[in-house]
Image 1 (cartoon, rainbow, N blue to C red):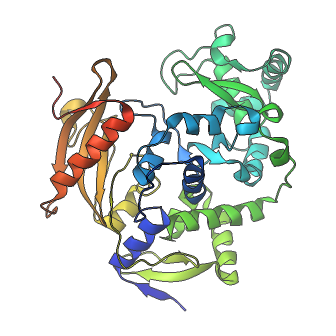
Image 2 (spheres, one colour; image 1 turned 90 degrees about the vertical axis):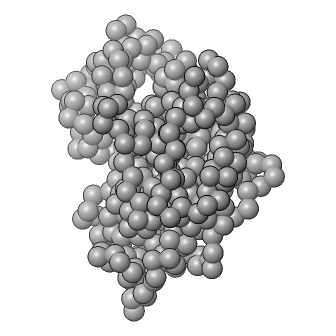
Length: 387
């Protein structure tokens, strides 16, 4: 039987599933961080560092100020301290270790040259010898970055990779190596997967592809609360056909419950364990890559909020700014804030604020409070205008 949900209830379900509406802890512990990561399944990594690295922000949005060094140790610390690993999930992501077996099918496909960007697929076939020579050097010498190889440094930017960097990224995609640590300007340092991922994780059985898809769709549904098929498969960038099969099986077993959301044209599914709070209270600045809003069509369906990141838009054509964070207040997105960390002068620059129509009168005061909280967390002073 299909359950009919009001849009307001669907919004509250989605917010609760994503970790909003709970009181922020007085002191954030590693357990709080892992609970947030388990709930969301990943923190997306991005190269833009105009405010703070993207993977730090979802935990701040939900928990408030925390020690970023703790998250760093979970991701890139000693092997025995590892709780996270890097891989391609939604995009480049930090993921809890228990997801490693669920993504091995993707690694195997990359190893066979069946997925990945065209320029990287060559390393699975005709350029495989070059990749294996690089792998042998890492095996012999230990962790290495692209810049440790002759002509290895990326020429400029995220996508303009040199030949060695491309080989390293194929080895990474295929699961032969992973990120051991990060250095300098966040450059990946690679090592053999078996020297980074804890042995007990590597020893976990590898599910077949269909089973892995079921688990990934279930994780997506748990993190979203209520979602369409597109929302569910987008979470881990799954293909339509295997995602549809997984959704059908999860519906048949009762994990996903069919739902119809007021105003949505598409069919939806509700995770059977999704909470249905009567209200959501709280506030948060949301990174552009936060799971709550990264699927822009879903953001518009849930909140009536059309959101686009304008980083790649020419300055004269930007409407709301360069690095704009939506501001969540209770159950609504009520403002857009263009922020920049001026680290040289220890300032958090608030370059533009745009309130939504019918934003509550107290939105400005609440936003100012959240900006000061963020500034303190980043070791900055709030500046309403750049000077």
